[in-house]
Image (cartoon, rainbow, N blue to C red; front, side, top):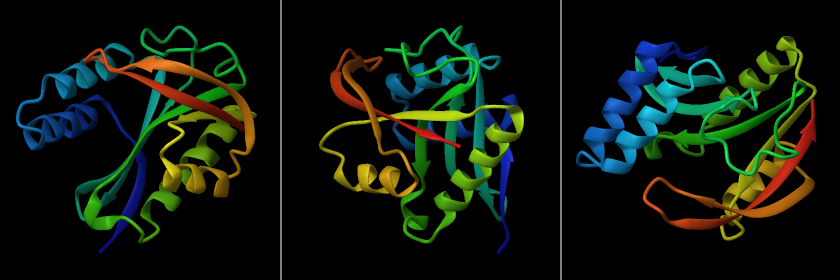
Length: 164
C-alpha cells in the first residue's frame, strides 16, 4: 500500500465532497461545504493523503484574507500567516500516522511558499484534537470566538498559533 500526500486540484476536491455528500445521505450541510470549497479555490490550498487511490486524510490551508467564508479572521490570517482548517481522517485509518504525514507535508509546503506562521481553531471540548494540535506545536493561544456552521449552529472556538 502506497500513501502519497498531494495538493488537490478542483477535480479531486469535487470528488471528495461528492463522496462525503453521498456518505452523509445527501446532506445539505455537506453540499454547502462543497460550494464553499469551490467558491474559494483561489484563497485555499487543499491537501489530501491518498492510499491506494483512496482519499483517507485531508486538510485545508486558507492563505488569503480575501477568502469569502473565513470567520474571525483577525489575527488568524495575513500575508505570512495561513489558517488551517477541515482536518479529516477516514475513521478506518485513524491512529496510524497518516494524518501526521499529511500535516508535515502541508507545513513544509506552506513554509516553502513563504508562510512563517500557522493558525487553527479547536472547540474547547475536543480534548483529543487539542492534544494533537499541541503536539504539532500549536501552543500559543490567540483568542476565543464563536463560529457559525452553514446550518446555523454556533460553536465556541479557541484559536492557536505556531511559528514554522
